[in-house]
Image 1 (cartoon, rainbow, N blue to C red):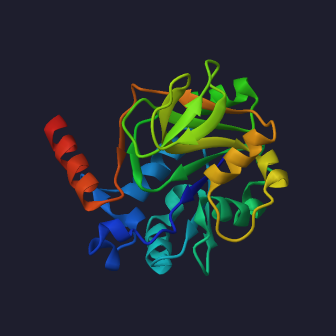
Image 2 (tube, helix red, strand yellow):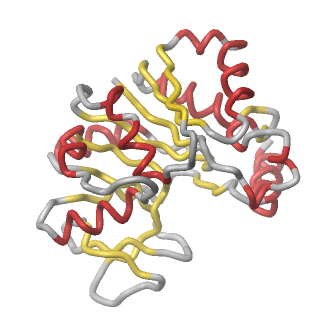
Image 3 (cartoon, rainbow, N blue to C red):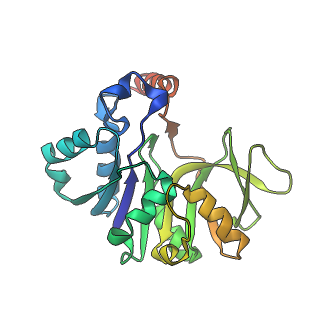
Length: 232
């Protein structure tokens, strides 16, 4: 089972930390976030992983080497220029195209989402992609109908739809590569919006019970560390 971790970003909202440490190697509760994601994916059966890298890529390479790739097959997709979530996925087609279905996972989130439940739900749906979502406040909402079919995106909650926030984890069918016509830098969400406009079925997987934190800024990182200290 294959997965991709998106780890190439500059982490500008985490400066000055990310001037010398790539965002995926930041520690949360004395645990490197990239290591936590890899170990959780491995525990769920995902034993072949590709990670896209750009900012301070050498430090991510050295970290993985020091851990002997956690006993997994881990490959790097090096980007000379940042490609965005969609462009990064397209560049990694060589690794993922024969996988059937794979997980795409942001490196700047902290979650205990059950990856196996998400994966099994995706297979039941038999959709092109299944996006993990939560009912929480957000700057952007994905809009779903009563059957959890993705219908659009909005900056606010829309009446007549289930307005849910994306959790940064999705299971995608490898069929998507034949449908990605975009080039260069682009977002996977933009691809999704185009595809549903063309009649493709994409689904949402709502899990409000799972823990989820965005660690993309100093404030969010501090909030998570405080939360975890309180749980001890």
